[in-house]
Image (tube, rainbow over all chains, first blue to last red):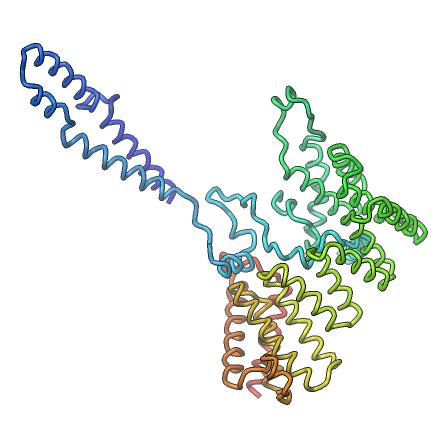
Length: 146
Length: 326
């Protein structure tokens, strides 16, 4: 999905660039330059100002191209966003229990930094009251069994 | 790897703890030992993150557990460098290190005396109070530990960790109603803690099984356990522990219905009628079946469960299906 959204975004940007100054084709910049040149020459020929104002608005195809480009860019960016996280408590909690760390992977496959698992697990593991001697004894037993 | 280092390692399996502590020398070597306070050098060095110190603390705990004292001392040294040895949290870690190093009871007594001396200076040093409680419990002076813990809760009644520890101490002494009361206090502070709901349900079930109360009591307790497990499932989809408890409770209620008591009814804690119970039982069986099936099939997004819990659920399902067949 990512290649699709990324290529959509790139295509949209190309289209926008085409409608805007830099391209060699018929562009908004060239159009406005041409118009101002014409207006200057027309005013020197004492033409009506009304005519100059009407012809200085952009032609339809440039406006359309810009709008289409914007829509395509937006579509590409929206498709590229990370998966939405659940906002319902039970769904969110269920995902933690069901998928564990795997559920918190982002699009690049890394576990999110702010993933804490079940935040209430601390109430049962109680790090402030840890009995380190018991833990060491249990660990030593476990090593012996291995 | 680092993500599990950002969480306290108390609940990790010995294998994971060993793995973490084996990585300790590398992590210590690659992480900055001290962060300079001068503005000029901080421009060139990596920015200081809170995660770094969390990692040191958790690494210290893992290393102490696996007996890698050298790395543990390095971690502690860096924490002391950064926060000073008069920081309350660091003081507790220093104490923890001494407890772990202690070889005989006399040394532990000395550590206990040190804690008491520290508390003379500042009686509200919460990390040290907690260490003292833990040490008292560890050397078997349970009643002293309870007294100290109640003292802590007197001046800090919103400490849910302390309430939970109190409940666990009471439970270890078989005092179920006190243990449940303490957990209810935790629920007041953390009303969405689904595992605590399940824990209360488990305590109620154990209290019924131990037969400490009379017949009236057991109807009420089973009804309450049922409600607690249902609430934990309501708060958390596909909660294996909640469904497991629900299944146990409904089985108990269906096979051996307690006499209805007036007291339970007036409290609104009477078990529901037969058809509701059967529906709940069916639901729990179905859900447990689904969870175990999907976990065993290795389905993606269903691998977060504990293997031992899955095995227990399977066993429960097999037992219940064999009794139904009969």
